[in-house]
Length: 402
Image 1 (cartoon, helix red, strand yellow):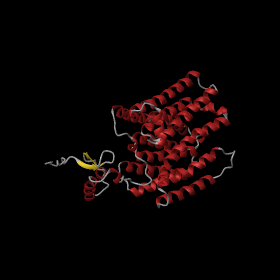
Image 2 (cartoon, one colour; image 1 turned 180 degrees about the vertical axis):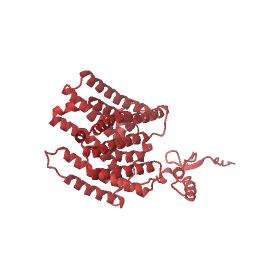
Image 3 (cartoon, one colour; image 1 turned 120 degrees about the vertical axis):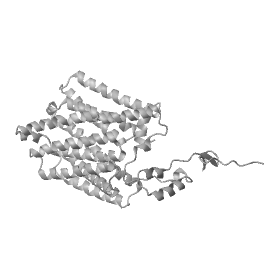
């Protein structure tokens, strides 16, 4: 007489199409249990969900998101099997991103010291050479990227962007002291910077209400979409007429799009696209800065002699240090901005300087070889961490997804 054997309590039955009608599986860690650990679900509901999840397939358990416009978590692209190579490269890329603070701090520090000397000596006119509108654009871009990386919990990148906000704000304050920047614009900038840093700090530790964070996301999305076309248009003045029309039109369209997304009038795909716009517009603002510099170099080749090769090298190094981390977490926006800034803003300006014989052959070719080796090493090391034989597979996953 056959006797049925009852599985031990630690195992449960789960239906599987590929391995017969039933398989034995250990209990799956409940996603609702993770949410409970973050305090986002009441305790009685957690118990019911945990019990229910034991009998549901994984596809039936919904993923919890704080907002339909939130950025995708970096953990969604990480492989399940995290070997020693993966964990080691994960740690190293985080350190590289954190080390980018050093060149970025040195990048802004000389300008701050020079401005302070001119202010103390009463040479306020010297500060008028620093365009406050360009500095303000960079500050807003940094502030938008702080919010983007706070959502992704990329601590090192958050620190880099926060440092950019603070250092740029110091320069803007110096320009205001020299009356090179209007006081009303500085007052509004101060309010926005203070509010943005506080909201991002609270959100990083999970202390901010979801409605407040959604309102802040909408603000930076609309602001970024309004500023970007205006800055692009202003670059080519006087070849195009001076006008605020591009900013007004883009502001109107951005506000309407965000409102439609919030009230659920857009498709899910369009809503996700709107949620990623703030990060992309901030990146495009930074990407446009070397384009504007290249355009200026083309119109006035003699002005390139006033550029500092050390400044261009620091820019290339700071952005280059973030390339491995952006590739590792498969963040196309971050990777695009870092690659663009390293090769166009850093190396591109060095190439222009070399063409006009303002830097030596050894300096230019040394930085060129160093940048190529660093980029190649990042691709190769990433493929090793993920267990791939071809480094190009990392690029394919970055662009098209896994």
